[in-house]
Length: 144
Image (cartoon, rainbow, N blue to C red; front, side, top):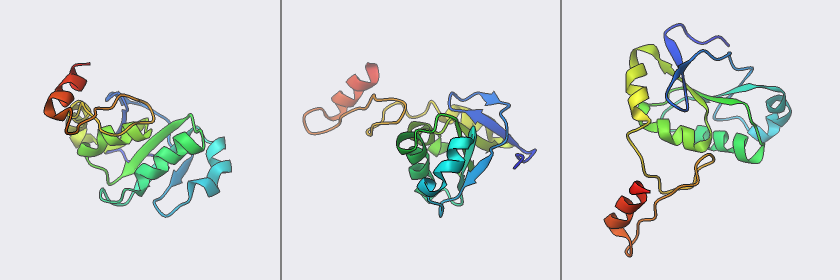
């Protein structure tokens, strides 16, 4: 499962890294719980996205971290887009395989969204927007 030479591995921190190839790949149609034994034996698991519009990969990443307690490298591979980088990281992905020609776009994408409205696997900070807080509440949350 060697990466394509035209791709790079980007860490959750936005750094280009040299990481080992995944020992296991999970597709959207797979049930991670059914693969628990193989997952526990792996140090790197790839979650394949067939389409950027298919959210099952995000669910699989979160399942690996929260339900199965996987502590290794979870790599998003396949058809993901830079706009999804922060969401991949918040679900628990620790690396993303990206086209080498788009590395700079992906590196910038991590910092574009700074406020989240949902809790994350790796970052409990959320902003609460509602009638009582509105835009001022979002600004205050961003300043924290």
